Length: 505
Length: 84
Ligand SMILES: Cc1cc2nc3c(=O)[nH]c(=O)nc-3n(C[C@H](O)[C@H](O)[C@H](O)COP(=O)(O)OP(=O)(O)OC[C@H]3O[C@@H](n4cnc5c(N)ncnc54)[C@H](O)[C@@H]3O)c2cc1C
Ligand code: FES
Image: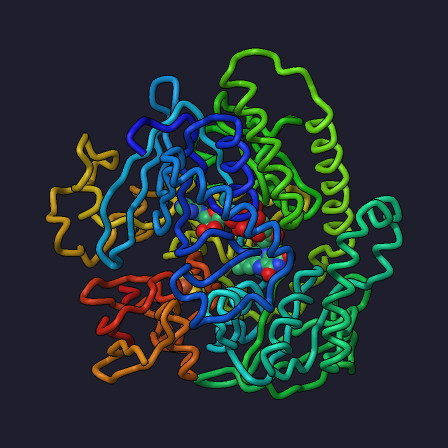
């Protein structure tokens, strides 16, 4: 594509794909970028196109017809020179530039070599999805303990099972496709420990009845689990993992309604891998620095605030999918379409009359958002989860900060995860608090939604790639280093010095 | 069969897999130790957000094994203090 884009879309999951397809169909030129090697994001994660025959994963998917239709539409626009598709491009910063936006990305198609790329457009749509929300427990940092999503990513992206005897734990319907996928690959899933009780859903009959497709998908997983004799245990949790070089067993306990383990119910189960997830935390790294307002979501996360047309509070900036709150792929697709419809309307600077299709889209989004809300309320983080921590339990995996250190900092008056970070280094390491942030937040403040710390860069980028830029390097510490030789340390090697940390003045 | 070279040893992989997927497929879930407690670490999030899976790829340190597609002859070094 030689002409500049009218719209940059970051994230090619269900939301970003649908948004790009709709915007292209409406006549816009689109640049679509994703860090992955294939279109599809988390829900439709696939191996790269050329390897689909070698790594068959179609049987693990749902809604492939829709995925393929979106792929075909995007391919046609690409051939026509209207779509600039950038896979293996990691966006590390998005900034306002004049009336539009500049998205800085590292092109990693020759990884580990990186080249800097800047994509500009008057409008930007962020559809960067979410990552697994984690709660620490003794032994959660043993090898073989993975996030539930990580297990799913290995399965869907590489047809690899992380173990042969697996326990899954946490909360939310997402545990079911992971269990079903593992079982379909011959893995013995010894237990799915669901902290919530299905009865909690009965408090939300409306969203239940109006989203039959969700139940159909759930019933499909349930049938697979019954066929493979996978036990799903409500109100139980994996409260500890044990092992040495690798996890060898878990401790499973029944939970009281507040989430504390019922005394005397704990039992040990031998496993060689564990998958855990407590819902998801939205990936807001590009949106927060642009100044987009956040809002609280029912699952305890702050999410980006959008209007009924997926517009954020920043003019020209749109968001769709799980950045607006976790709600599944079907909702992400509809929000992507809705966001693109707004982009089209705004780009033409005319009031587009609300047509029937748009009205139907909006009512679908409302219905699916109501379901997402019911899901969040039915699968909360159990209030007493911290009762299964010992003082020695590592909470921040990167800096190896223990629960005891965090409790001490809290007793010393630290009011939130930002202060805890200053006092203990929790959240200062490589992952920049993505893994420990929600937990540290829960350990300190329960009455507010979790807002991630503002991060200078969304993903590490080498000095070499920065030096590549054909303009003033956006990070003042960037030094001119040859891009040909990958630089060992990244410029963002997260914040060992507090000068690069916005939170430590 | 394609191969990458991990710490001097050939490791087979299937085209399309990441370095992390190839390691896990070979039964390895840990390939690094932490700076403070020297705890073993490998793949955790699988999608590039946790940085537990760091390796050195073709001489470039601090690479997330779960994001880097395996390529024929790629050299991967584990075990060194990528956390430093
Ligand atoms: C690991 C994982 C596995 C999941 N698996 C399932 C599943 O099997 N079934 C299910 O029902 N739900 C699953 N989910 C939930 C899932 O996130 C959604 O339901 C759905 O995929 C949301 O669509 P989305 O388009 O909003 O986001 P996503 O599908 O998450 O897509 C976001 C895309 O943005 C890209 N991206 C993010 N940041 C950047 C950046 N800085 N630069 C470039 N690209 C970027 C990502 O690579 C990704 O492709 C999973 C979630 C996770 C985290
Ligand atoms: S496993 Fe988390 S970054 Fe690779």
